[in-house]
Every structure is written in C-alpha cells, then in structure tokens.
Length: 113
Length: 112
Image 1 (cartoon, each protein chain N blue to C red):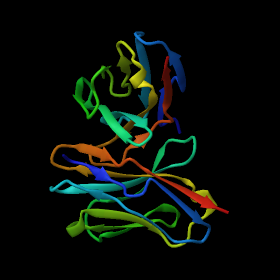
Image 2 (image 1 turned 120 degrees about the vertical axis):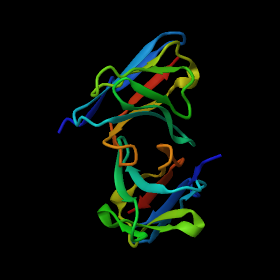
Image 3 (image 1 turned 45 degrees about the horizontal axis):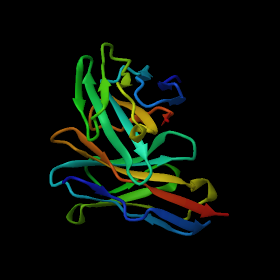
C-alpha cells in the first residue's frame, strides 16, 4: 500500500543542536514532496516543497530538505534549532498520477531552552 | 487576509446526531480537502473536491458526506456521529491538486 513514513515520533533537542527528521515514501511514480509545520494550537503551514530540479530544497526559517530518489526519502534538516521550532512536523507526498496526497504521522519536536 | 475559515472551532455532540462542519475559502481555489488529525495517524484525507459539484472519497470517507455547490464552500457532514469520529478536522484548499495546501485553523469535535 502507498504510505509515508516518518521515523521519529518525538524528538527532543537542546537549542543550537542540529536537526534531521526522516521521511520515506513508498510510491513508485512521479511525486511532489512537502514538509509542513504545525505550531501548538495552530494550523499547518508550508515549510518547503520539492517539485523538480535541485534535490536540495531550502525553505523558510532556515529549514532545508533533500530529495534522494533512490532512497525514496525527503529528510528535513536544520543546522541549529531554536526553542521557537518546537512544533509538529509533517511530511506529505503527492502522487501526480492520481492527485493522491498522503501525510506522514508527524514528528513532534521539542526544543529545550 | 481571510483565507480559509472553519466553523465552529469547537463542537461537542452526542452519538447518533448529525453534525456539519463548515469550510469557506476566499481564494477561489479549485481544490478543497477535508482531513482528520488523530494522534499517531497524522492527517488522513476524508474527502476532496476538484471543483464545484465534483467530489471524491479519500482514505477514511465512511460515515462522512460532503457537498460543493459553490466553489468557496465545502461543508462536511457526519450523518450519525460515532465516538470514533472524535477528532480534529482540518479543511484545506489549493489552486491545483499538486500545489501546497492552505489549511484552516481546525475544528475540534468531541462526540460523547
């Protein structure tokens, strides 16, 4: 079955630590990839997206993600997290052939000051 | 900017009751979506609509009904609510199916 897997359910880091959140998908066709962030009590907001071209994508607030097609992965990274990055992060994959958009289960990030 | 608004923000009801959650967007986006967010499951698609009068089932559509008589509105109805439908419901819209979606603030629905 088509799925999106986020490896970490809850990540706890100290400020200034580096972050990498994993995302893998099982679709075989052409995909568009997204990372969304949901701050406590708020709606989802787009962090970054990949459609084509350079597989290293830069988003807002210093986040970036790398699409590795051979690994079906789209991991999110940030070199130095801040307390304000505490949120839940969702990976999403759109399969272009059938308009299907699937979200991962989310990774909760807690950054300790 | 008004963007996408959901109402009500919070709702408590009883099993067997009919509940309608409203969603309104001001961008004239073609696509609209309903998701439910549950711990451990992330967001799961309930229904989506590609345009007025065109709707399609998502991953978890059983027990839900939608309509889209106007481009800007996409109400979601639980015809006979069950406890398993207690969740946070998010509406979203996008100009095209593969474009980033814009989300509403959510409706927290509790069914007793």
